Length: 530
Image (cartoon, rainbow, N blue to C red; front, side, top):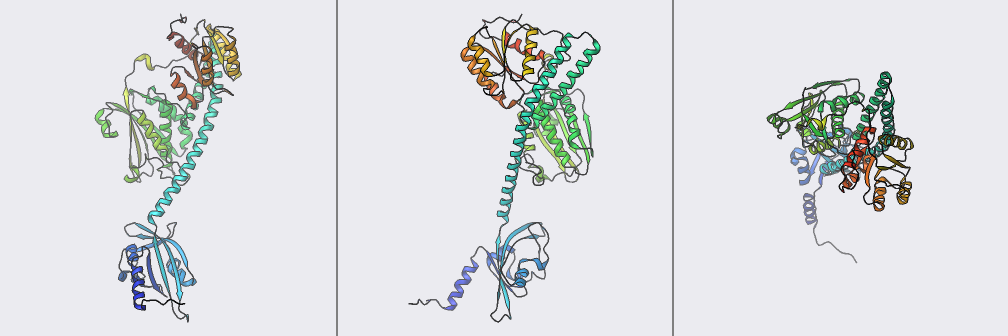
């Protein structure tokens, strides 16, 4: 049985034309020479011109047709000529680059059709606009690349933290033994040599802090700082980072007020901004770091907020600069202008977060072809004299108390140093190489143990778990944690923000910390330090 159409040929043609005109895809018919014969409404919308103008395209094209990598396509490499020449369907992604610099991206499918006798040919082009889809795909690829890069940085951060842990143990031994040696030397010449060892250890300690700041594993620990001193310390590392073809200039104002910020985080700010400046000067240039004081009106002009008097740090370069649109987005997470796999887009977002956390402000001044200046404003602080002066030199005596201290440290040389220092200061000392040994000593209660001095990161039971179990045995036991690996610092601060000693530390710092803990006994039933 057959079914005959109830529609005439004319009606079918009208229906086909109606469907064609309402397609969302552009449909264009070409003759054998590639000239436009007909086009539907979607094609006129995509090409932004009428059928009459479309027919004039081969003679006066209003755009440049480009390939996916942005190269101009010669006429014989464009979709329609390729399909007509090959005599088979052809699919290609192209961009129409208009005179106003806008680019419309199209997925083009061309179907060539030959007449039965082969004397004539024509083709149909199907055009799908993919500008937004292409942008979203590129954005997704960029985010995926940024995520992979961030994961690499996280792995590097874990490695840096582990290295810092071991390095800080060694530095604690070096600094501690140098200070202990200084206590027994009479010769000024030998004491001077020991002092040089101490200074070298302190410089190595500063490098470790910068390594932790780079890996974002440095605990946020604000203190009163002189910004010029922070910059001068950071410059030692900057010379190795920026290369010999970039000149580094310092223009530091005298008598700057102090600021309240974390020194490791400020190191990170200076490093990130300086590395960005370096990357903007691939052919060399000048990197300038300036500081100045400013009143509230100047801060308002420079930082878009009142600092009520502040300290300004400006890091400027003579690089490629940025346009206003790019400049407005630089602090957005994952936004980057660097090439693929060259940046995460997280550096300036991190800098912005650090400055905000320090109650400051940051903004950028930039001009294409001229350079960029990153302007940071931090509130000024007027400290009490005793609150910010650093201890200089080494003391000649370590005065402790008569209390009994249990030291738990898996590093043998560091454990021996702690024993030597505490014994010299007058304390009674018990030693354990791990948490299991410490708990056994506490259960035996052979001595009245009044304080547990424990490393945080140890094989088996860590220092935090040890402290909890130890206080279950001796409820009034004081705890002092020590560590050079700061992943656990937030947990420690939640228990007691004053019961932590950063490695590396000196014997004097250890004894001072113990004295503060014993003198701050809330129970009132412990002997005080004389």
